Image 1 (cartoon, rainbow, N blue to C red):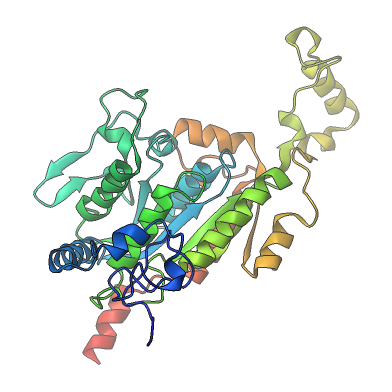
Image 2: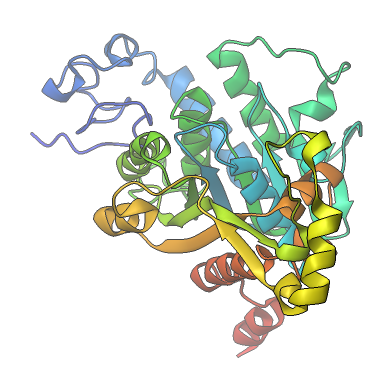
Length: 382
């Protein structure tokens, strides 16, 4: 007797899951040790009421995301690697190129997107069509739990089910506008926990095309995985890549963030001994350089802050057979753009990290092109 899954299994299910609505749910050999085994075997997922509720949820998700062309998850197994920076600046860059972009912050306990997108202390409003997101510019809509908190520094102390419920609300009740979105960029917390499992499952349901969840494709268009070059980071990012493999989320590529420090010599500070203010001699050094070797001032200085382990993120990408999107150097102006809530490329166009960022965005657009509505209309007329 076949044990083929009858619907997308939960993202935290064991390998070989038969599906929660299968007659063998909770009883098959693959169910042993699964966190969902008890619920599946009880029939909690397969009762008529449960099936009807699930189909209603799928319909809501499909309807809410029907006008979103591509959903891109920004992931990393490690915290502090610049996930939110990458997510925000990809969204900012796409919006600067006249794409319609949504930026969804599902880092429930540590939402930093509002500051980085320049929409801190703003509020969302409820309308008949749902939550109206906050607009950073005409092409960039932002949604975050930060907009729902009365106190900006309030701690969000929630267990998994409540987090999952809010993520579902974000996906089903946010009104991204009549024209929809070309790209929905989703910034996630570090790790492979409740938020990741929920967002993947909800997206699978949203893009199941009314087939009762019978799909072997991911609902997410793909994931951008962010790492820094050292092994401490990459060891956790490998777990994230395995999460993507298990949940069938296509990996659009790996971004090697903080890959060395790059600054123009004219922007450097110099110290005689240590880095305290009393020993700073920047003005004197600049005078000497202007007098003796002025061409050096326009040169780029670089330093390896986080030395790569082994073959580094490029080698990791090759090992997992996924694209390598490139390196983003440590650039003080990139930090400034996130603190100021502005588009890095538009504000600091000559900064060292602008060209690598644009290259990364170019590769994403190539991997996930947006069809022109006019071309679609012509095809229909023909």
